[in-house]
Length: 268
Image (cartoon, rainbow, N blue to C red; front, top):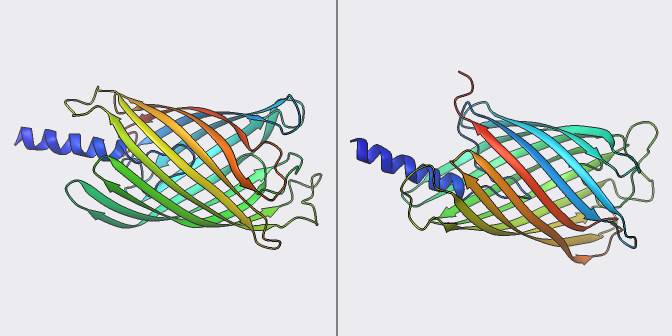
């Protein structure tokens, strides 16, 4: 019986390791009653200059139960030529569907984010993770097939004024559709023998957006590697690069370095 339980737990650990994407959230949630903390660092090169945008995003995540997950984060950057707090956001994800098999499972979830930002609106892209005030809502579906995970999402985005001093330009579209496709594969370990093994995941994500009023769009590719230590600590290293673009974006290409740690059974 103990051996069966141990194998079950190892399988659960394998499943969890396969669905942790860097640039998007999968349909799966953290274990119930756990708390996660993140520290995201993004370094994006500004187009036509030798300067870089640096974004620091501390984040806390709470798995209220097995279906509901809540996030809160803060946005700090040097976009306005000084490093300062610019805003934050609240994110919620609710799992709608779960179908499990021995070496695969399927998840579907609905999610929403509300963001507040006081920085200058400086591009046509609507980015609610550090640039724009507004809200988004959408659906994400994730499929795990042994050591490969596939995830896709589609969402509606609406941008608002960045406070009373930074109005959203009347010449730009406030509405957009966002979409993504993510593929990840577990490279190491080849076989699980314990929770202390380091996981190495390789992934690539396609990230796009189309404006609702003028049809302008972009598509980015974001390859990344991911390390998971002791089933609790995580390090993400990725690079986002523009493949296609017809809208004005100030810094589409750059790196992300993110650290995350989970506290299991953090509350009753």
